[in-house]
Amino acid sequence: MQSLAWPGGSAPEGASLAIVGNAPGRAPSGAAIDAAACVVRFNNAAGFGGPAGGRVTHLALVNRGGQAREWVEDRHFRERPVVRAARAFILPFPILPAAQNVPEPICWTRELLAVLRPLGRPVHILPEALHERARALLTAGPGDRPNPSTGFLVTLALCEERPAAAPPAEAFGFGFDGWPGHPWAAERAWFARSHAAGRLRLHHSEG
Image (cartoon, one colour):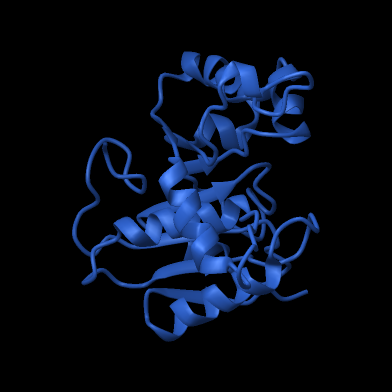
């Protein structure tokens, strides 16, 4: 499979990577984000075209739940500026078998693929094996089965494939807050460990 972080093939050695979360605040980070060779954004891309810059190479779109359904039902979704600008897409959840997607559908992967197909750009679907590794990293103890956020899953995938000699990935706009079903404290702790290890540089949101 081609690199997640480089549409069209493997990223050049040493290529810079900016991962932009959904809490960019008012910090003047747009220039630093746009200077990266690869810019990964999420969902409705908060701050895109404003304080968080105007470039995107990959757009990660949650493919389960109400947000995904809303996009599928929006006939103008492909016309959104961040969707038009993205060179590739990442869907964080594997496709659920049809028998498991009833009676109320939660997986909208097939429908999102159909929406994105006319754009003719690569779409990556993160595998279940990555989810298992993410849960192992975030677990609080025996019997715990955390539900990682899209931001965590995509960042983990990008960091795992990044060469050890590459410069740290630059992470902007991660507020570690939102839907209460995600293990935010554990995710924040993993980002802090990765920052300390030099695998990514966490830029804290302001404002």
